[in-house]
Length: 147
Image (cartoon, rainbow, N blue to C red; front, side):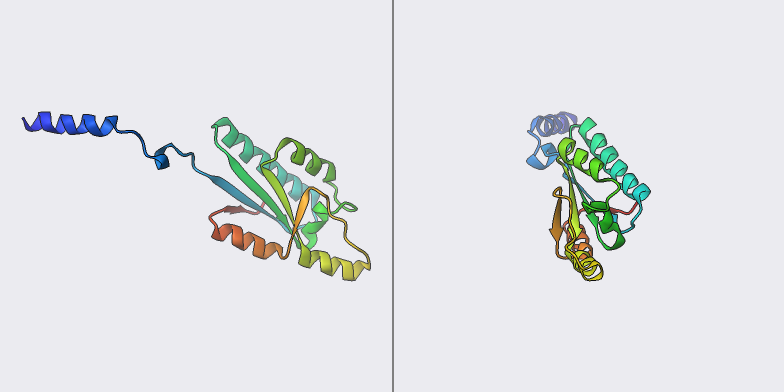
């Protein structure tokens, strides 16, 4: 009798629909830190973004990736100095889940030092402070890497 009761409960619970939490795919979010004026490191960051994006696409899951550049790394997002500008344009066209953020504090410092406006690729959004942007994303549960 007891075995039958346990079996009946097991069957009832197995037949219950999964909760929305069980069905919903986990939300994946990654922030990548770029603070070096180094094309090889930026290409590594872009490779990381592409690999993570492909990994989750293969699993049928979504991932958001934001590459935040500040300090000397801002050169990677500058229209006039970026050695990877074409690759960033390509990413923006083929990987809409990857975004770019440029630090306004760094832009202001570069403007003062160079005596001119700092042109940023139109594929990047300007944020007040790159470090603060990364902090805020991490506080919202984003994973962090620095290539």
